[in-house]
Amino acid sequence: MDVGLLAPTLKGQTLKDLSVMFIPGLIGLWRLNEGNGLIARDLSGYGNDGALEGTTPIWVDGISGKAVNFPGVNERIDCGNGSPLDQIGNGSFWIPFWMKSKDAVPLPFGRLFDKIQDGNNWIFFSSDNVSNRLRFYMKKTVLVQEAFSTGSAPFDTEFNHIVLIINRTTDKAIVYVNTVKDSTEIDISSLPIDCSNTGNVSWGARTNGLNPYEGLLDELYVFLGIPTQEQIDYLFNNPGGAAFSYKEKTSNLYTIVDRTSNLFTKKEGDSNL
Image 1: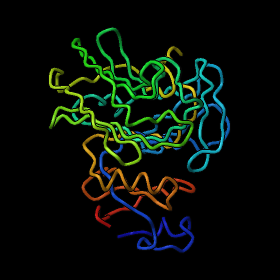
Image 2: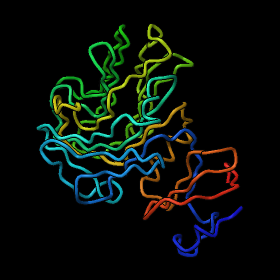
Image 3: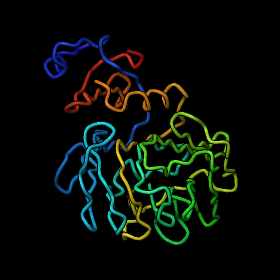
């Protein structure tokens, strides 16, 4: 395989030296390491950069590099609905990210992730009113909404790694907090397999600024498919690892992210490295 493009940026490291795992299905990655300005670059290769909108969010130190602090007014990162973000909701998908709440009592239904088209087409993930719980909503005419258990408790002013999984094989919505699966499994069997909508992906509040979250967000991912425990553990244990392998573009082409700098392509690669 051709790794010549990687060698200068990875400063002499070989692939075997890198902390690398192949995780297929990545369709969005906003690392939030810009540190200034109003753009959050999408490093998935699809170019759906996020716009920082509303009362300007604040760039701060994060779990890895920089992060965005949301003061809880109307701030959000609007990533649009460009392909393949428009596929979110059609089949299984999962959303890993890091959060650090400002307070142990969150704002009412503060949006962590939001994608709403209209009154009949919803996908969002929020605090459960003012309790220390996470709540999931998904609607395609039929509404499914339920809070996860108090055992998750991510609103504690500390960094927590959250993984929301929508599994259409088992028809369950589940969440992992710091690699531990929550005891609540939400039944989504009443929903159609395709619950995608034309709403924009928004982090930190709705796209109109309502229902803001108060705290930090960092390392925002969206994947299609269903993760393994090993993949969840990897993302938790390597928030700032040297490199990360993702997204097959064709049968013999995928990419590697050097997490300290930029995006590079490796041709004719073996997805198992």
